[in-house]
Length: 367
Length: 250
Image 1 (tube, rainbow over the protein chains, first blue to last red):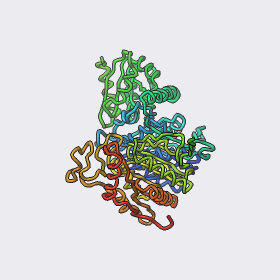
Image 2 (spheres, one colour):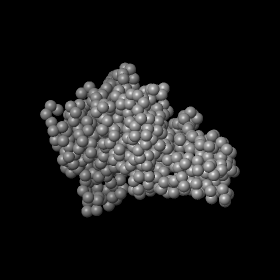
Image 3 (tube, each protein chain N blue to C red):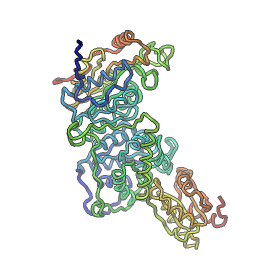
């Protein structure tokens, strides 16, 4: 059992990366495995600085491949272990992430997005949306929380551990370097004070009891001999995933009830949208926001209802429509036309959105 | 009148008796290596502490071979999974089992770094000088002139370099005071069991162990019994069978 550092509500002025380390401790995380890559480094730095007080563990591995796989090892040993990565690190960590998906390992990872493809830029983008949701050679049996600020980082990092250990699907906190490096006031709290109970971990290897007497030896595998055997397993996973989706899908709306133009955005771009909405509303333009918090799985029903109510939709992202692609698939059959404001690897400001929406008022979308 | 004697097979306790016939090809070395390992686990009474990890490739067929807690991983990734376990649970005796491709090609960075960091684990590389599961391609340890599917005219060392010497490399970089590094061969199973016992004991003492085992692949080598044995003897000339690093008390 680790020492929890935050015992009572404490308001702090922290970078998002620091917040994530504190949140992991609040969630009783016992071990972090990691490898340096910008812009997530300070999660490790903070974790290491706090180590003696927390009585937790840390291993700096030789690459993200091993950070991912050793995190799996730690989890199998019964620890609440986690990792964090970004960009090209997220790419090579997919190897481990797909194993976690296949073996239903409660893998928790914070992804602080940077520009892509390739090395690209080190601070900001929303270009790991698709990779984080659907990376690996599988079906995307993952949960991805997209945060829009520091309080979100704290709340959803804690939640990620419980989602992972409850449903045993890899779970991600998807943010970006702006959130990671920027300072904001944030309220840190002991999850118990909010009625949050951490789901106990489980020893998948070296469980209690003697082999052959109290239990059989564990034989964990991710390989199957027959195609049908695999499909049966995956159909079971899909069933579990669909059931879970109903329980955990989250979203937030802002002035969406009477919105004629509905903005669909996630993460930090959704914050720019809120700024823009206030300015546009002051000018009498009825505009609102639908922000998926779980971008995988999506809250499909409320999403469709919000889109149905609107006359136009605006997708805006710091990527070329990675979320839009996932959302559009869920909107099949609806007639609401849409327009896009995509800035690949570049921040979307409130002004960008104001200008775009005003243009949409003058010349409505037809697609 | 003929009397039929039924003798129970001499199975180590750490081997899974329920598994039945081995899934490995006839003449394969994996069964011999695993059985020797299971005997060594018995010798040190480690069944309740051992965590066995196996790689991709033929070694994955050992996923239920042992009667110890087992996890089958990805190609080259057995090492980080197992040190992930032992870092989180220092009581565990971690064993990472892989082929020469898993250890010396796709997972080489993990082997190097686990050795340098002195991870508390035993890494076993079964060296059969080719990729068996995928159909017999050249591996880092393919011998000069050896024919494989990707060196159909024989390995040309001027193009592909010379065979990788895993045990020598690990001995050069591992902590000399806390590591056990050896190369053994399936031609001498009594010695192999002894080597595994020492290697595991070293892990129990908090050290890092590496054992490369020269093994057999008659299917991909396309050799009969006599030639298979001959090939193993040639390998023993190319790859020196000995202890490279040891420590007192093993």
